[in-house]
Amino acid sequence: MTPDRRGALIVEADPVARKRIGSWIGQACSEVLECPGPCAPDYGCIGVREGSCPLSVGADLVVLSLRLASDVLQRGTPGWQILLHYVSTGKRVVALLGEDDPVRPLPDEQVVVIARPPGRRALVGAARALLGDPVRREGSRRAGD
Image (cartoon, rainbow, N blue to C red):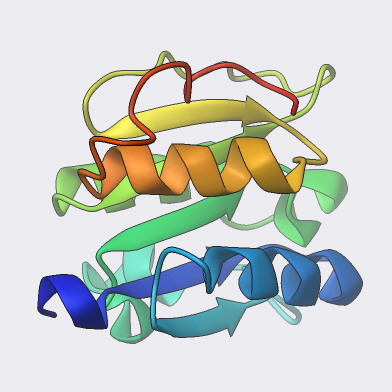
């Protein structure tokens, strides 16, 4: 992707939240793909299992909810393992974290953690910070709007 053709992957179980997040991320990325995360029957993630996620190939950014169907059912691949997979492949990740999520990633230059459900301003700011937009870099690691 070139700077004007950035791609994003949204990984969120809730279809309404996934569409809303995708529309907001469209402010920072020109191409947005959506994924519900691990699904029935085994709730496994192909990216973790195979070592490569076909949906993330063109993504410069991944927005990942850490509460997916696999987390709710405690079966298959949990969100935190998916986060580790994306980080290990060099992806920049906005991790959406809830108060009751058991694994709490720490933000760094590759990961921004914001509260779930995210506000538009916080989410777009986090995306722009990770993508290197200097105008939005300051204060983007805080949750909320």
